[in-house]
Amino acid sequence: MAYSEKVVEHYENPRNVGTLDKNDPNVGTGLVGAPACGDVMRLQLKINDSGVIEDAKFKTFGCGSAIASSSLVTEWVKGKTVDEAGTITNQQVAKELALPPVKIHCSVLAEDAIKAAIADFKAKRAARTGQAAAPSAPSPQLHK
Amino acid sequence: MVKLPIYFDNHATTPLDPRVLDAMLPYLKDDFGNAASRNHVFGWKAEAAVELARKQVAALIGGSDKEIVFTSGATESNNLAIKGALEFYREKGDHIITLKTEHKAVLDTCKRLERQRQERIDELKLMRLGDLAGRTVSADELATLEIKHDLEHDATLARWVSQVKTGARVTYLEPKKDGLVDLEQLRAAITDHTVLVSIMLANNEIGVVQPVEAIGALCREKGVLFHTDAVQGAGKIPFDVEKSKCDLVSLSAHKMYGPKGVGALWVRRKPRVRIAPLIDGGGHERGMRSGTLNVSGIVGFGKACELAKAELAPEAARLLGLRQRLHDGLKAKLDMLVVNGSLEHRLPGNLNISFAYVEGEALMMAIKDVAVSSGSACTSASLEPSYVLRALGVDEDMAHSSIRFGLGRFNTVEEVDYVIDLMVRAVSKLREMSPLYEMAKEGIDLKSVQWTAH
Ligand SMILES: Cc1ncc(COP(=O)(O)O)c(C=O)c1O
Image: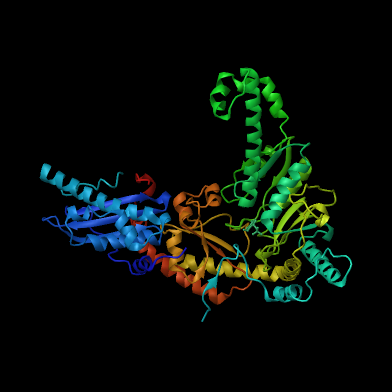
């Protein structure tokens, strides 16, 4: 199967690979997928007090299309507000990367990762405003 | 400098040896005759060439030329062996034993036979229900009426079913963790109804070599036929039909530097083994496989067998050296590698490794100038990871992380060194990018994490 140029480009030069401190109250972490299914995506968003995404990092276990999908969304979400980022859909990702039908699930995973990271951030903030001193609430995505 | 792309996928197919091509060319040009033409020189030349090839193929496996049936390849040979033997020995029984790691040409053949038997039983159930209900019963009613009339304990139906002569019953043995058949399990699975045991010589994914001599001895003792798909092993490791006491052996030319689309089924003559043909027609190949012979392909197959036999021992030693160099080179620079299947009982040219926390398709993309295969679901049409690795009990994530290296006659030390270097860089880069690798390094037990399956 041939990959689209954009998938290859992101795969070869992935943007924003890395790790943010998951205990930072301004960082939301989304961990989606499963090793058994062959793809796991972790997306981390650093969100400032005005709700703008200042930084995004990802790490992905998965095929080239999964890596490209995660790399792409880190680019897209940076500078967006949390609400704007929450409207990114898998169709947009799939279209931009020209994913074939068998790879659509990679774009779905990317959308899920954004939603999960935002949900984690919101849960942390709620915990913080609820009970003033709980800065290191564990990430709910890591149901351990 | 090595020449790119590099071909390390010699289990999928092998390049044509130039010496094989040279042997074939005359039969694609001037000597185009039909081997069945008895009355002119064109036919005689073709027939002589086919008969020489028959001897060359038989010699590779220690058989006689009179026992070779040329086919279109091993897919056909496997179908012919299983369906043909089952049909011929129907009176003896209808039970087949095979292994979960066999090639699809064996497994899907067995599945079709099982389905045919089940369809026949369903027909009988409908007939029986018709009797009991006093009216014609349709297939949609089967599930409900079957319970209502308690067909499970119906003696008449049981008697009918015991006489079913369509399809087969199949036992799929689970291999041991190292991929080898459990001989005690095999012994226990053989019943009075067993016609055939079909277990391959060497596996196409993990290269694991089965104890065919012990299997053959057991089958002989129990009076059941032994078919082996020897596609990956013949010409690569010593294999002899007498020592292994096989009755039916499948071979394919394109896995041993011959042309695609030609293979053979070896059918034992002493004691005589019979099979019913799948293809009817002009009665070629002693009635077991009609159709005008693929003369140039058969000539190439014969030459390929001759070369493989002549060069077997030194070539096996050379490939084992390359395989060890590859394995050692990877192990020296990368941690958390797991070899799938027994290293000891293995084809010299095969290495199947899971690179933990890295997905196989992404890895193949990173080494795009090197042709290998992966057990990752992403590379298969079914979106399921390799059934062979799963049958060994390999976890799904590790199956997704597997790469099969298949070394062959034309691979070199320089290529191996190039691939080691490339793999080390690719795996390191992808692990840097892998959340699982990071978590594992932090000491998180990945099995304890509740993943969001999708
Ligand atoms: C073990 C095994 N059996 C059978 C086959 C099928 O052979 P052919 O391609 O000649 O039909 C293959 C090749 O894919 C194989 O590896």
